[in-house]
Image 1 (cartoon, rainbow, N blue to C red):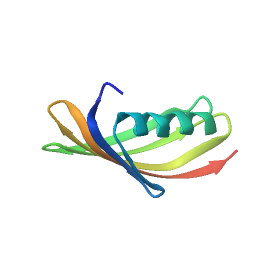
Image 2: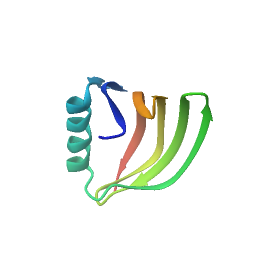
Image 3: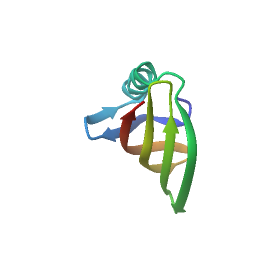
Image 4: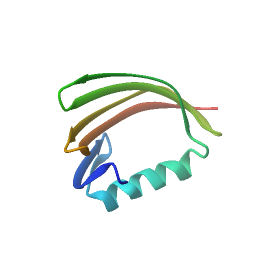
Length: 90
């Protein structure tokens, strides 16, 4: 969580998580649903303080064939992030 600003926002199709505590809870919940989650490939494009990253992932229970994140980074901290992905059970 050191990469996030204190008031960072993480938005998903399920809603917004505001602040480090809420964002941390989002990631802890995701880790419990997808044990041993690991990124298997990724590509990124950056313009100024905006990063677009596409990725794929695998876990013990599912694969993620399509993932897309955007980040806004200011003063070396993530201030905003969006997450979208598809999950395919194994």
